[in-house]
Amino acid sequence: MLLSSCFTPSRFAASRFLTRAVFAVACAAGSAALAQGLPPAVVGALRVARIAQNSTGVVVVDAETGKRMLAANNTGQPFNPASVMKLVTTDAALEILGPTFTWKTQAYIDGTLAGGVLNGDLILKGGGDPKLVLENFWLFLRQLRARGIKDIRGNLVLDRSYFAESSYDPAQFDGDPQKPYNAGPDALLLNYRTQALRFEPDAASGLVNVSMDPPMAGVTITPPRLSQEPCGDWQGKLKMNNDASAVNFAGTYSADCGPRVWYVHPYRMSNVQYVGASFVQMWADLGGSFAGRVVNGQVTPSARLMVEAQSPPLPEVIRDINKYSNNVMARQVLLTLGAEMSGQPGDTANGARAVRGWLGDKGIDTAGLVIENGAGLSRVDRVTPALLASVLVQAYRSPLMPEFVSSLPLVGYDGTMRRRLKEQGVAGQAHIKTGTLNDVRSIAGYVQAASGKTYVVVFLINHAAAPNGQQAQDALLQWVYENG
Image: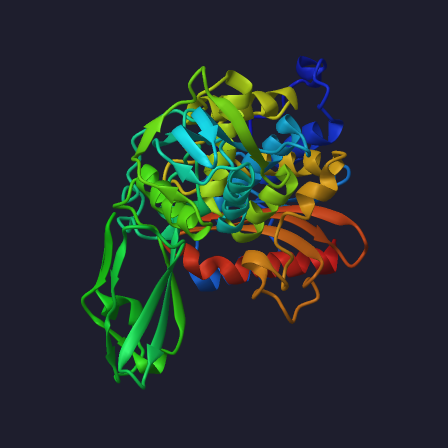
C-alpha cells in the first residue's frame, strides 16, 4: 500500500501544531515510495542479509523543512515498529503533559497519631510514577518517620486506582515471564517490579552468598551449591524457583563466575505483595514497626495527607525510556495519558485515543496505526514510516526539541546504540532509537550530516531474517552522514 496521507492542508488549518513540514514529509515520502530509492550500500547489505526490499520501510528527509527527501521505500506501508513505537508515545506525552509534568506518590493516615503510634491505617496512593526506584521510596518512607510515625497498629492500604485494574499475563508475549521487560504497569509501580539477585561465591566457606534488592520481609532465600565447573550458562544452572515467599536455587553456581547480578521479574508475586514486602522490610530498617496486613484499597474520606513525593520531571523519565528502551515505563506513560486526558482510572484505550488525537491535531494521518501498549513490546503494533517521519519532523521544529532529541541514544556512545558504529564518522553525530523483536529490526531518529544539515531517518525491517539487517541500517546512517 502506498502512502495515502497527502491530505489537503486546509482540513487541519485550525490546528495550532500543524506545520507545512509535516504535510511536506508525508507527500514527499509518498512520491518517493514509487521510486523505491535506497542507497546502493543499503541495497547491497540487504541482499547479503537475504532481506527483500519490500520487507523494509525507509524515510530519510530534511528535519528542518521536511522537503528534501534523500531516500524512501514503502513509506505508507504499516510495519511492526518494535520499541521505536516509544518515540510516538514519549513525544505525545512531552507535548500533551508538558516538560514540567511530574507524578505524585502520596501517604495518608486514617486514624490517630500520638507518641509515634498510629492507631489506624497507613494508605499509600500511587500516581503512576514510572521511576519510583528504591532510593526514592526509602526517602519517601524516611519523610513519614520524620513526621513522627513509628509504630503502625493498623493496615498498610495500597491505593492503585489511578490506573484501571486489568488482567496482565507476563508470559503472553514470549513465554518468559521472569524477564524484567515483561513486567506489567501499575499505579504503584516500585523499582520496575524487578528483583536484583546478587551472587558472591566464597571459596573459603564453600558457600554462595545470595542477597536481594529490594530486601523483602518474609521472603527466604535458599542459595545454590558452589561448584568448580566452568561458568557457562550460569543462570540456567541455578534452577531458580521464585514465588511470593521464597527464592530457592536447586542447582549450582560456579566459583569461576565470580560476583554476578541477575535481574528478574518475580511474576508469581502480585504487586501488592511486592510493595508490601518491600515496605515492611524498609520500615523496619528505618526503626519502625508494623504488625498489620497489606491490603488493596483506596484513600478514605477521613484520611489525612502526610507526605507527598514527586517523580523526576517528564523529560528525565522519557530519557530513561528511549535511551534504554524501558518497556514498563513506556506503558506507565501511555496509561498516564489516558488518566490525565480522559479521567481516572487511566487505561490503554484512552491513552491510545489521546495519542491519536494529538497526531490528528498535527495533521498527521493515522491510517495503519495500531497501539497496543505504547512500548512496542507487541506483535500487533503497526505504524507507517511516513507517520514516524512526520512525528520526528514536527518534534524537531518544536520548542521542546532539545528535551526530546536528547532522550534518544547517541550513536556509538550510550543507550542501545553505544556499541554500534563506534569507529565510523556518524558516531556522536546521530540520536537514534532502536527496536528489536525476533523478526523486527527498527531504527528512527536524527542524523547530523557532515554538511551540518540534520535529517530524520526511519528504517523498519519486518522479515524472518531481520536480525541480519543491522548492517543495512548502519550503512544507511553512515551514508546519510556522508551524503546529506
